[in-house]
Length: 491
Image (tube, rainbow, N blue to C red; front, top):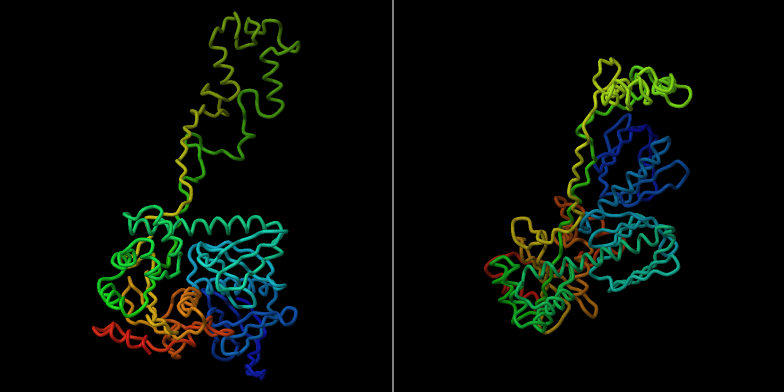
């Protein structure tokens, strides 16, 4: 919590309110508690931008254009800016359906500073409050040259990342590694669905069915006859399989799969080692060290007693041999001299009050190390919470700009029909769905201004999502579903 001066400013620049209050940011919510008046709570998802128009001043612009200006925050200003930045990045990742943990890089694109977050399935570019998702499925090439990294993606302009500094090689290596891992997961997932498919046919199918990309049924059947029908049968719920199969003769069907959750498992075995046989005694190294005391004086006394050099007690010492008072040679103490010498130095139980008992050797047991890896068996389209989304895109067999989006392996209540222009309307719908994490229901709520649904600010910022402008209608899952969808696609 921090005390601050605040101003609430309307979208037209009119000052609505001003005063002093307490500011907190926790659990993704920015809260202003004025000294007099009701609290203002702002979800991170409702923040359009965060800026510093003047030194030591934070300006938070909300989705409706209202701005909250905070000043006199003191040391909390830097912390508040960092927390707002991280929270908005988390919201952007959640909204886009990013999978796994991210690695963050600070760089420049087209002369503007950006934050780059590399997830397991995409790169999220955050600049000026707006987030742009570049899914690995649509990436065609990654090139690094002279500390600049260029990413070519289908249906998007290539971006060149600069000013990564010493992290240029790290960024390129991580991006390349995660691209490779994403393709490996796709191949392994398809292999688990269709274990009878030949390796070369599986390779060709995986190239078409990249994560989040719908492949036309005719292209799949060109790889192996009946491949599309087999995928529908194993991936779709029984009623969805029947319904979509009934439309196969009246519409062009494309099938796709999108990973929803990370299957990355952390390394096992990296635990700190402790000696089970000896109790740590940090800070006790200067305790009494035996009959001769501790420190340099004890060492010199022990050396003199052992008959080292000409400063000893004589050739035979007072022990009768050449090894000092405790023997070691032909003296009267015999073979017990070494044991008594150890006790005198504090190493044995010889009645020495300052000594420590001898401890056994440490029993070192190294735990087996299992490196971090992907649990490919966890990629599944079945169950109550599948980790992979199966979906279909249907378009008119005679051509046109209408595209229907249907979820195959989850009981979604509605099918969404969009009208898209361009040379390939289905590809545009596919790209737009991937950008918003295939959250068609949330986008539909934005288009219909449903106040009970989560507000998707990313669907409204700038030009907005094409799915908002292109939504034509929805079709409920009733016994007449196939006929209604066919009628909608026919226009």
